[in-house]
Length: 146
Image 1: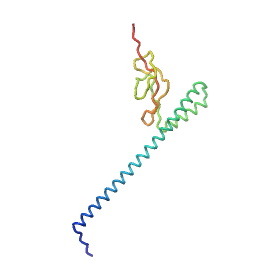
Image 2: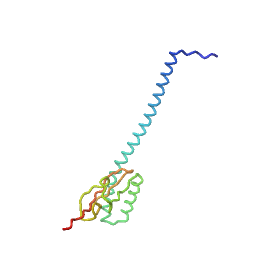
Image 3: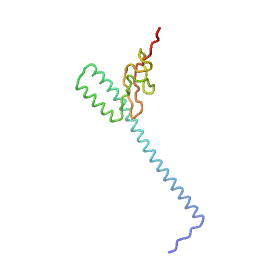
Image 4: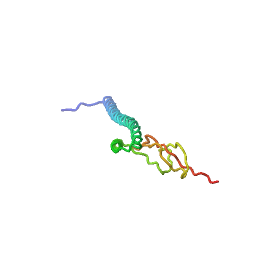
């Protein structure tokens, strides 16, 4: 069986169609990547919104535990904290550290080591490495000696 001869015009048309097919496949691959990226972004945003609301509840539970000293309440706090940690939540360790404006908000100053956190008024948290809520801290200022 003989192969049909393809003239130059048909060759050019074939090359154009192959190029269009390659572009369409590349566009489709890019679309799949974009859809997956958007899916991950939406999941992250949803998780962030839920965790943000849950840390407000955690704050309330800490306050209640401070006054009640109830072992059952402490178990509930620990359980909630473990769930949030599994989602990527980490407490910002601020007490005694150098003030870091990326992770902390200074709400007051007090006598103490210059630029060191004297006390934490409200705990701060990061979620998957990003600051979710900065810690509200009191920062030390050395008082000038007269």
